[in-house]
Amino acid sequence: MKLWSKGFEPDKMIEEFTVGADRELDLKLAKYDVQGSMAHIKMLESIGLLTKDELTTLLAALEDIAQMIERGEFTIEPGVEDVHSQVEFLLTQRLGDTGKKIHSGRSRNDQVLVDLKLFMRDELKKTAESVQHLFDRLQHLSEEHKDVLMPGYTHLQIAMPSSFGLWFGAYAEALVDDMQFVAAAYNIANQNPLGSAAGYGSSFPLNRTMTTELLGFETMHYNVVAAQMSRGKTERAVGMAIAAIASTLGRFAMDVCMWMCQNFSFISFPDELTTGSSIMPHKKNPDVFEIMRGKCNRLQSIPNEIALLTANLPLGYNRDLQLLKDIIFPATAELRSCLEMCDFMLAHIRVKDNILDDPKYNYLFTVEDVNRLALNGMPFREAYRTVGMQVQNGEYTPTKSVHHTHEGSIGNLCNDKIAKKMQAVMNRIR
Image 1 (cartoon, rainbow, N blue to C red):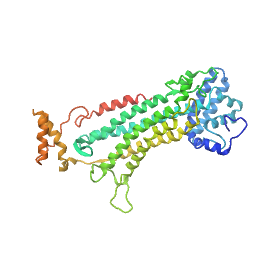
Image 2: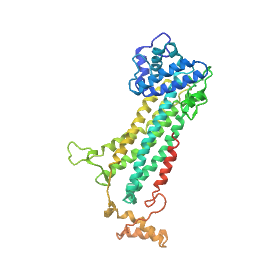
Image 3: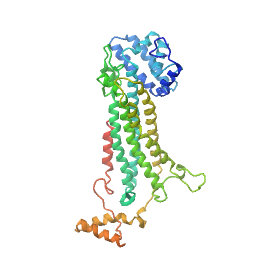
Image 4: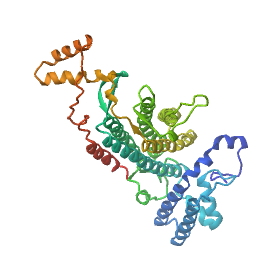
């Protein structure tokens, strides 16, 4: 069944090519399609296009369909084009002509837009929750290991003393920045397009403010053309949020792979959380984090893929936009999978103590000794030259004491303030 049917059927090859995997992907939108339809018919009744009895009957039938979706029993039947058609088909099957009235004042264009906005809004909330869990884990580890020193690197050369408190805490605060993208994408998704119809409005006296309130949107896309133009823009914003988090997570995964290497041996995991080799019996590989790194690198391509798909499309709806589902639907699920796996792995991480006792890290303390001389009255450049010559002549002996007290340093991590920053961003995603 096709909502646009005019008495002829398209060629089978045409139908298969244009529909693609859309019917399978549409199942993720089913509950949102019912929610949007419920709000729409309540509005239709308020403007006289449905009677109270018809509204009651339709709402009861839609609630039955919602329960069917909740139980996992909802399917898009063979010959039915998409989720919108399936819902309307079920209503018409049960209610006859009353079921056919549900589409008054809307198009599949604004119907799918509503479904997608509601879907992406929920996906962003779920993503935010997963980020929050990982953030909390990193902050806990930062506090737990704040006094355990480790080497800090620049250019992959030993540079200055760092700590596991700084390392874990750095990625926690980086996630706060990433959540700014999530909040921005959420705000873009949190606008009601229902009533824009095919992109040019309707001659019905629709009450768009009512559906905005019923669906819990913060505001609406007022201009009906702008509402249709948000298709693709919303997905791109979501893609940028996904890419931002993936960038942080992928970089963390690289650190873990490096720190697990025997040349570093800063961290380890229980044997059962690593993998082995078919010929080398000693191997304990960081496959989880290598896969995570690869997935996160791939996820960072999402904004570009969406940008290329939507580049230079003419005004109004174009069928190219259907392919956005192929990109964004699996991406949100894959990112959450990586976040949850990272949180699980970090619950079992082991941190090595006394790393800096190894003489190869002695030069980490040169800056500490330069600063100590400067604090005792020696001009900084003279102190720098003094320690530098000691290093050059093989006479340098480190004091191996670290005194960092300013905000955000080894001795003053400010994790409580970082937590407040995260909470402020999370409050924008409601």
